[in-house]
Image (cartoon, rainbow over all chains, first blue to last red; front, side, top):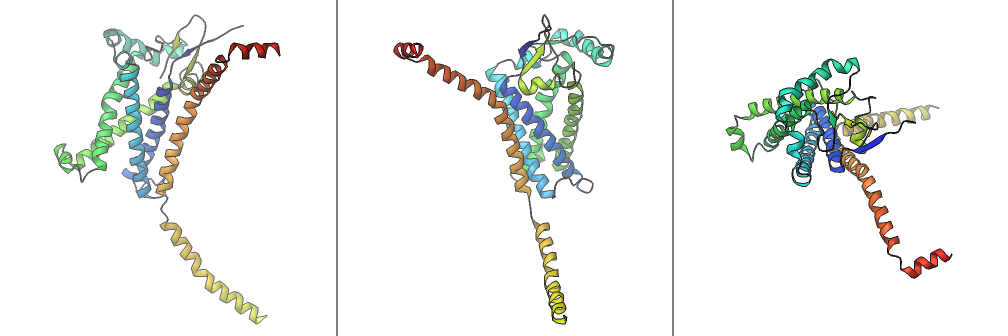
Length: 218
Length: 81
């Protein structure tokens, strides 16, 4: 009889952050699309509703981002270990992982990266998440804060190039995050079964076969 | 018969404009607050559902600790039963 071991891969604060972030970002995309293209998209009842919900969701995502930073940076103190790629990751790891995603996955090969609670992400994930969590997210939040407080922060808005530039930057940053979301969801389905990587993000536990380390995490 | 017909016509004439008034009131209704509360409610639900296993473990621990604090006499009495 085949037995499976379980590895506790995703602690509670990380799971809460992840799902709040997911729900918040989807809400931001829907409301943001209506705010940007009101003549084409009217999923919510009114323009005012879209703005109010967008601002609330933005605030919630910023709060959950703080929770993520507080947990990894101050509680677990593993932010550097988990998110910053090593020299080996940059020299060989990224290519190895890209080869897996583009070719060897379709030939049935195993994932070259074995996730552990201290080394959750493969080299490609590390690079992508570093750009997202340390560049895109802070910038999209910062531009969002400026856009929601134009009057009190008028001088700062002018300093960064004016309202038009700020709106364009916020929109382009949001488009980048949206593009990542699709990739993220696709890669999340590349496990043994389509739900194999999604389930641990909900329960915290990943099932691994005996004598094998845990794979993945998208 | 004629009186009945006149009454129905008058009633219809009187009630007809009210449907328009009701429609306008509906159009003006702003449900942005409701959407915000629904969003926050969903967020709270995510947090509660994720914290549930922690709560169950904590409850079990407290229960276990409370059991462990039984005096030797109490434990002896329980085994005698």
